[in-house]
Length: 62
Image (cartoon, rainbow, N blue to C red; front, side, top):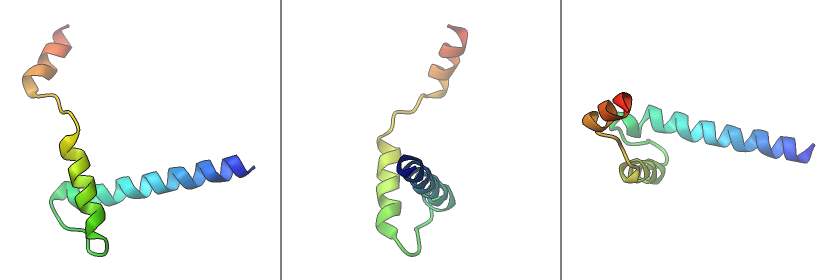
């Protein structure tokens, strides 16, 4: 039972972080209460690898 409660809490925390990211840093706005969290999320997204348009087209053909 404890495992289920911890799993639910973890999923709620992750979904809250995703919702905050979509609401503020993804649109280029600063988070009003916790700006350090917005900065951290922005740095994490900038460091993630992204496929360019031409690479995406090559993957569709392959």
